[in-house]
Length: 322
Image: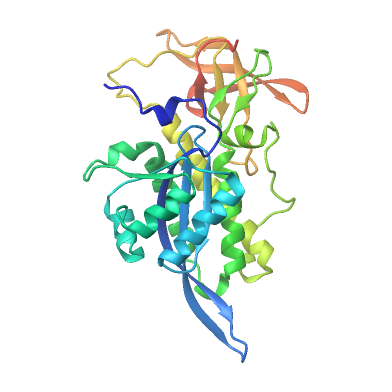
């Protein structure tokens, strides 16, 4: 296996090197001046930082070069200059590029990128694995958003609701845990893309209250929170699956050990909560396989020990954090 590209491993500021894709569309409504509703479509451009794995969304109103350039300008205005843009040549993006009339050899477009000090690199055809760093995130996010928005009555979504929802989704995806980075083995702090972006350990919490699908017929801010909670539940489940390595029963799976840092599964967790703990005791069965563990978790400054089956925890890091 060859080495990773330099833009994946060099210590650069966030969003210096970016993977990009376009997905959608979704139907929204807007009120006409003379009364009634007008239906239109919206797409989303997703930017993935190749270093921190953070994501950024921009909503566009049409598949035109003007809309795309505006989205790129908004992204640069918020996240700062971009040195490298990467995208694939698959049907998902190259099809949009054709409709956008984007050609990497087009003098006008190349001039725009040069003015930004940016280079756009297309991966080779039929090599989607080259964009795996952003394709996995995009695939999961797209699947969940399509399931939520395409089944939602278009008369219940406005442009403001969609834009705010994308910001909530961005916060959810950027709060996902990456690795523990604490010198205290009793209270491991976990690094997330949001931590790298904001330099804050606290995550964006959801507004207090309960939100469900009936709120789609209520005020717009409750619509957003209802859809964001639905996205969180599915995103957390699918993301934990990517962290948990599956093996056939015939293949031995390493036992959890004292000092391992784990994530706890809990269907009742609130949005952006990722409870992390340290294994303090293992309880092996007669065949010496560990099927239950005791985990110490710090909750509001108070240590608590929980007994959990290994199926309800996800290994985040082996050994004691140093």
